[in-house]
Amino acid sequence: MPIARPAASVALEGFELRVLHLPLVSPFTTSFGTETVREVIIVRALTADGDGWGEIVTQDAPLYSSEYTQGAWDVTLRFLAPALLDRGRLAPEDVAGLLEPFKGHRMAKAGVELAVLDAALRAEGRSLGEYAGAVRERVPSGVSVGIQRDPAALVEAVRGYLDEGYVRIKIKIKPGRDIDDTAAVREAFGAIPLQVDANSAYTLEDAETLAELDRFDLLLIEQPLQEDDLVDHATLARRLRTPVCLDESIVSDKAAADALALGSTSIINIKAGRVGGYLEAMRIHDRCLAAGVPVWCGGMVETGIGRAANAALAALPGFTLPGDVSASSRFYERDIVTEPAVLEDGHVRVPLGHGIGVDIDPVALEDFTVARETLTR
Ligand code: NPG
Image (cartoon, rainbow, N blue to C red; front, side):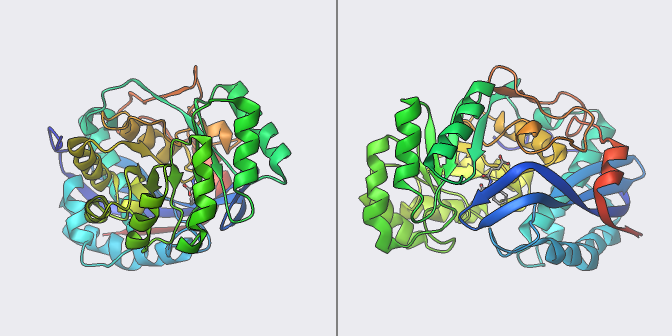
């Protein structure tokens, strides 16, 4: 489903970058660490036709991927933003090509592209959902639950989210905190839609342990092995009944094609940040839809900016599994948009407003800003 109608071009005048520190409502623990504050970069594209907003979803340390905030900040200010500003007038569909000479840094590229796309769509009066080809007005909301003190605490955390209405639970696992945690949740709540996420904490030597998860009838196991272990993931997938779903490994549409060809994954988690932008994310969606491969929308603890864009992405027809598209309140007491995503009957609305469809709360934005830089033509 290629984009039906490309966006109009905008006359780019500058970029404003900010690092924000947003406190989380509770610590979020994964196999790679614990976060209590979300450090994120907000990109504002300044154009003659109005502003646009994007979000760079790196974390302060390179623990999920090789990208991290200071690296993204540096590459954006020194290379990405100047390359686009040099060009002046450009369409959102031109951004990835102009940034292609710079290797990697996909999260930074994604944030910059979203800001330009948002500016262009706002100027045209079109929503991101309409542009992308959304077929739903609201999307089912899954929640990602961090590793807790013990299985009993995990059960209580999951109970809270189920009571709020989340329609699918994902629990984080790591060696030593896998079988018992999963068993506890299954036992407490019966046949709820449940999946686990290892964030690449295992090796092929753990295959026997991971096969023990088969008895829990999980929707999927996410990224058990390292990012570049495509062949080992294929070997593991043959040994498990639980479907393997790749996240970290899928850094582009090409990587998705390779992983599918190798049998490394049978479901794909699509995250715009990880793959270099919403346009590349849409290409992966299209590929998977054509091949009958289920996809779902991952989350990177986004602010209201990325959360709104993710809801639009998750409304595409191939997103047949509930995503990590949760309410803002899952992570934040205070967001930086005026209408943070809320949970309604287990779903999140796809914003209808122009561009990403949400407005920035300038006071909140200012309050959370810890660094700022502006680059103009
Ligand atoms: O709902 O936004 C959310 C969080 C979902 O678990 C989640 N994200 O590995 O997928 C992940 C994890 C993550 C968050 C990874 C932040 C890296 C940074």
